[in-house]
Image (cartoon, rainbow, N blue to C red; front, side, top):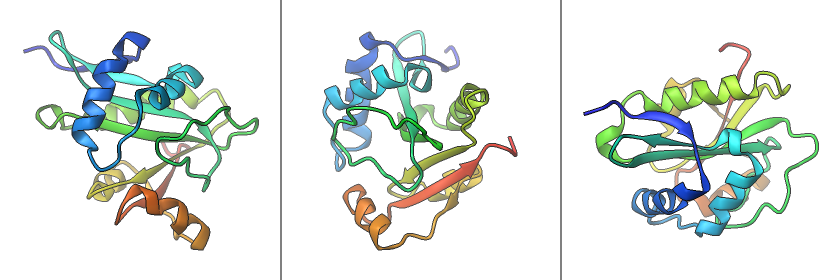
Length: 168
């Protein structure tokens, strides 16, 4: 079996991305059109984990503002003019293909933004993924009332996290 590898996502991958999202995140559904918008806005930040047989994971990221969490299943409409982070909207990998692949995607994103002036990655950790993100250099941000309100739609235990890129 060939090792999975990250490659840029294509419009033709949207059905596979949506299917994986529905499987991995049944409690956090998002319409395919919302995912497609992220791919249009920042194609260089969106990838799929590919094997010769099928797509087994995806990552979606786009420029954004720190502490401004985009609501789930909502169109962005536009990207901010002065983005100060790359927001990792989602990384989802089928269980049989986990193990080091998220680290590879994070390295890909760090390389992608190195020339952009953006020096921070941001994300919301859901379910029990916080230890994974901490191993990858992310740190939890103490949430004020406004941030807690934005996190509520991401489910119990959702944590806003940041990672500086200077150390990579």
